[in-house]
Length: 222
Image 1: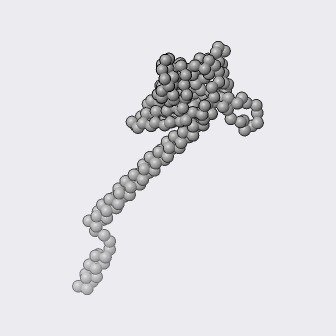
Image 2: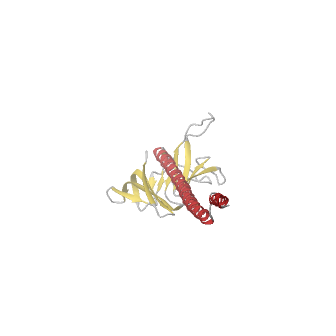
Image 3: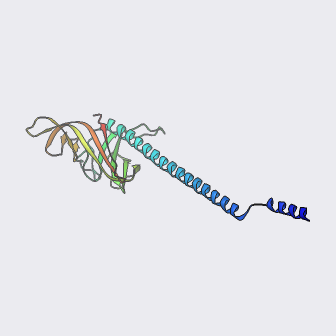
């Protein structure tokens, strides 16, 4: 009888975990689960932020490359306005667009006829810097155009002309002009009394919604 009781006691002791042991195991498992979930969430958040930054850098590189090509291909071409009158400008940093100009065109990959000049403008539109290319150098009021969003999350964008400028009765001097208009047909400039110039570059100042600012310079190939 005593041996049978001893055997039963041994069987009871080896039959499973106590409630306290189970609770301790669940507590340890919950700690591990919380830590793993937190690490995974942090990793995914970091990956998303990195992808966002890489996309922003890619957009900025595209903008730099395109603006560099635009300014290198700038042409002073006497255009007409949308109603056929002689336009006041062929290169402008004033008006509705941030910058409006004519540049040499590119060959058509489909080998179809196309003019060798292109009318281009940069605009700030709904918080985005947009490059607009028109179908014609002298567009009519309803002429087609194509908009390409270059950068977004922008609070302010501004182009500035940089070069050697000559005023009435003054020697040539280097300065920056925020509001600048050049009439290629008359060979005159319209900005702060300037009568002649040697345009060197344009400066682009960008202010983003996160408070960051960026300044870039692009040489003009005139």
